Length: 404
Ligand SMILES: Nc1ncnc2c1ncn2[C@@H]1O[C@H](COP(=O)(O)OP(=O)(O)OP(=O)(O)O)[C@@H](O)[C@H]1O
Ligand code: SF4
Ligand SMILES: [Mg+2]
Image 1 (cartoon, rainbow, N blue to C red):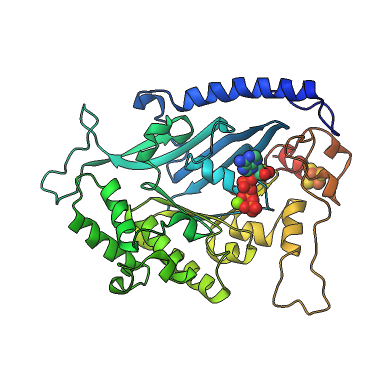
Image 2 (cartoon, rainbow, N blue to C red):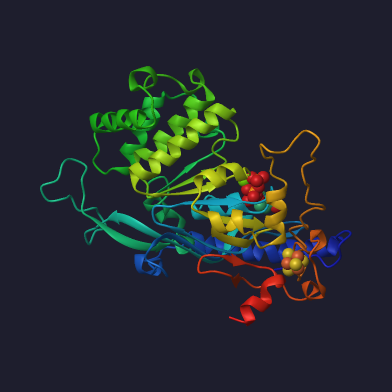
């Protein structure tokens, strides 16, 4: 993988070398993505059976003419069953690229999962030797035999991703209008989810399911089923998106800034709804947001990302009551609170995130860190365990590790 050799500009020769190396790498990764593979090639084992998702050492890069953007550069975190995991970090730190990698929505050939595992505990159809789902003996229409399978999503050929995407893992985006089709009614779009994901589903079954899901998100189906997306308010559209995500009965919902485009009261209603739904579907939520207040209220665990890496993770209590990394401490200080009076200025973490094409070898936060010591100019800090559930990547805690 070619890198630029100076920080100021690239020569024509350097650009040609980068383009050539990138083209080769992109071709290799595209071929891997589009290969035919037996299921056994992407079956895996969970490290901890209590998890629904385990992301391990994930690397997702974008190959550009300027060089390789290491958007996700060795990210590892878990989502335990029946939990809400909140992911925070400044804009551009790789939160969305990580979740898009889980959904395998990274746009190739420039964007590629280069390395790492995304293990997911799927509850999938038991299949016969022809690969067809086996109907459940004595079951109703659309009911099939099921079994647990651990898939490594990163290793799945892209044409197999329908087993997971939208069904086992559903995603709710910031702006529902980008995911809703303006020319179809809400009912048609909701029905489609069941028709795609439940083998043999009839239109009647799909409609009954759609109405059930609308009721679950607090919408009277008669008012909305025949409406077009533009006829609904932003809050209602986001409810519809959640209904759509739920229609396939996912085990994991990824919500990427689900309330950022909504006003405060509607935000609170949607968050309550998400919390409520987590219990109803008996599943987990991966919640990505800039808003630490939302995380504090919703999450059981928190992952803090910085410049394509996880720099701290722990329970919500550990991250809020006992933050360790200077960046996490800075984030907390830059959060508005009810107790601040008008004369108190919000803390602003000085400096900027380093250029993702030219990451230094040392801690990426060094140039912005007030606690930096001589050691910080050395290797990038490893992940240090400070409690059974709390981890931090910062040299300040190296000794704690050395002392066990
Ligand atoms: N298609 C692309 N081509 C090149 N670089 C990209 C592409 N998509 C994302 N990136 C880069 O990947 C990095 C991570 O982006 P990502 O969207 O994951 O950030 P984020 O943490 O979700 O930020 P935000 O809070 O603004 O949503 C950024 O540096 C971004 O510029
Ligand atoms: S490793 Fe050093 S520079 Fe990096 S966050 Fe810790 S103290 Fe600051
Ligand atoms: Mg994002």
